[in-house]
Length: 294
DNA sequence: CATTCGTGGCC
DNA sequence: TGGCCAAGAAT
Image (cartoon, chains in turn yellow, brown, purple):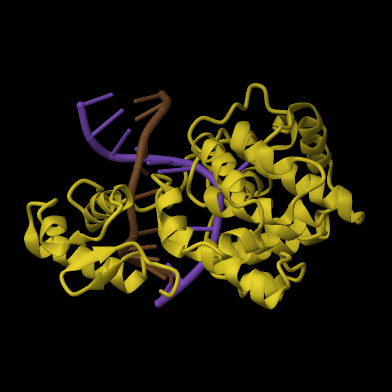
């Protein structure tokens, strides 16, 4: 049973849909998976050039699986969260070996892939395979929270289950229409009903929005502040990974540790990167993981 | 359930 | 100017 405000979103989408490269016809499931992993916590504008370069070098999952995880990490460049590159490579290997090189079309098989959680699995099923399945990312959850609950921001995981249920009942019965609406909700949240400055003036759902009717009240429980990046282990890891990406030969641990003033912190970062599989330490040098590395 | 995990642009 | 934020996943 689709609702009026969802129809408005669908109509809005028909006129404002962006022609993003991963939306090309025919849909390429591997391309969709690559885009979804790159888009995890990373803005579309920064993903666009990386996505094109990536698929030009490795058009299919077997292409990527045949190269080394270290090359994936190097190609990832400065997209951030380089463990995603490692996981994407692992997903390519799994797809190649367990699924004959094809991205699986079952939820259980998708979530079993490294780097693929509930959101990404659902997104691949809906956007690539056009299944009728709720796709709940932060955009969609924010839109639902505002329109139906009058809340500024999405709530807990418990709330998310209710939203999935609600959306599952509200999606159109026809899978293709349901997939379109899922895409529309995300696009709408990304372009109109944004987190920081929603365009309620030009919003096609304004007449149906409980949050707007209540006067756009601020969230009762503001999200915890993001930990400062400057001086963090994350920054140190970033410095070390940048050096390894730029190097064609293994780098001495001593020179790597010297890239950060606090020796204890740089050694800790080095160790955590090795635990993550983002680098390999042999004797007194470190390098990106080769083909035989896990 | 709370934390950790990069990077760079924006108001 | 610097805190805030951007299509999450794993632990």
